[in-house]
Image (cartoon, rainbow over all chains, first blue to last red; front, side, top):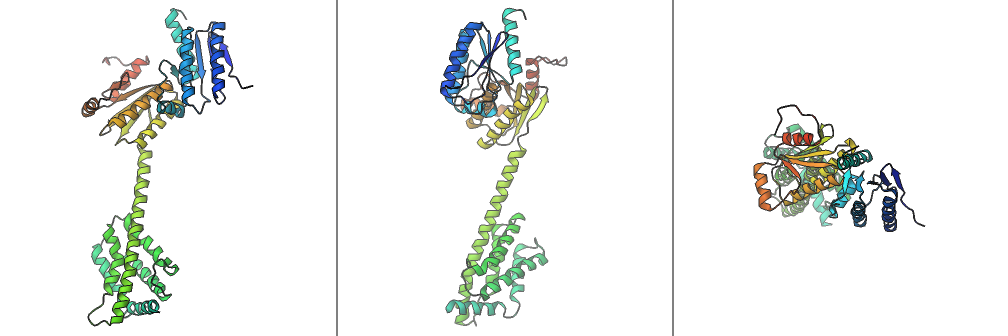
Length: 125
Length: 279
């Protein structure tokens, strides 16, 4: 059985911290898990932490964009946090600008971003 | 054997009246025009002269021979010091070739002497070329060392404000330099947790499509990491060039000066500004 990436719930936010090398099957499983968890928990925010991710390919890049699109369809905003410079450069060189995916430097800033969004949307903290 | 006789004869010629070395030094000193001290020149050339005599004594006129290793080492040292002191290739080679001129056969030289001289001339030519090669190698080493230093010196990332870093770019941008700038800037964003970066290109004399492309990539990469990039210091000519080239910065914020960029970033991040700064 392959590894699965855990999806953790913090308040109204789901946290996905990627700590393993992303093989294609793991990525597909993660997409399934995440979509199910969003529906099950009614979360309105997703933070994908890729601080530990050192290597990306175009598949992972597309996965990030897809996941964001799926989450948005389920009314959850996605923020990708902790991208390393080397990873960012690789994605740019691959021609993937991850349009539609929001990003933040750190997990803390990512959570703050979602918080601000929610406040702006609902008009209450 | 002919070669042995020739080299023996050459040793005789070189030591004939003890004046050869002196004339050699004099000839070189005249061509260098006093830019190197007489004493130093004498030391260099007497070392070379002695080494050459020894090599000839051991026999052989092949400059690649083991016997000539001392001569070659001295020549490398000589051309290195010439290259460092900014002498031209000609001025370097003359140190070797002058030795040949000193021994030039006169009308009353015997046929044997002339034959020996021709052998020597061939040897000196080879040594001269070797000198130039060493000279060029040294120059290249100097150039590549300088290029490396320039690369390190020219890309400082400075912190302008809490959460704002800037890279003032100075000098011509090429792919290698832009790559270094890109990596340094992105790394400093991570290290300082800054959400805003300003790339200032006031000091860049020319921007072509390639450089513009690199700048765009840097901005997009910074965005991927969750930081905003502003480009400032675009001079009028550069703006005209970029438009003429059809480069579009899209939704990337560009400002005329670094001050404008900083003001924009601070307003954007909601920091308190001193009054009177409306713009």
